[in-house]
Length: 143
Image (cartoon, rainbow, N blue to C red; front, side, top):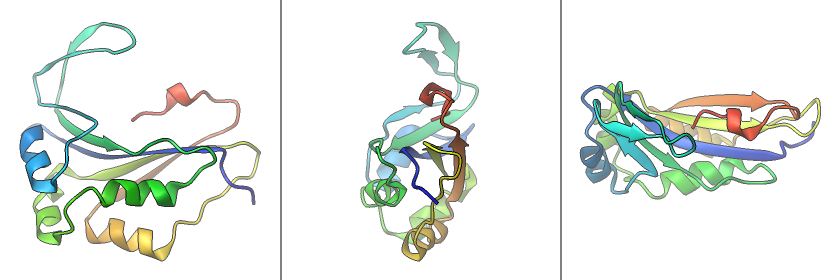
């Protein structure tokens, strides 16, 4: 089993009552991207303005090539509070760790360590793995 060619990772929170500044204050870090419900958002690629249907707070790790999801997980988590009561208070926003994994062959694989899985689980973060074959473009990843 070969390793993936590239990986990306972003911690995400969503919710109608989400106030980005409050999430930042609780976690102790600023997001890469954030907005509140009803905010006007201008697309960076299209320039089209839309209204946010819900609030969002996202913190993205640096992309890795070759893949190093483990490093990306800890790059994100080490910036944030270690206080698990804070994380429990944020459960209503259903935190998830979006991971995009880009294959270079027909049989790539990944095995997150027990340490990484424990850190994610203790914080109530859902792990999402989107796997793209070698013919798909990175632009199709949804972070």
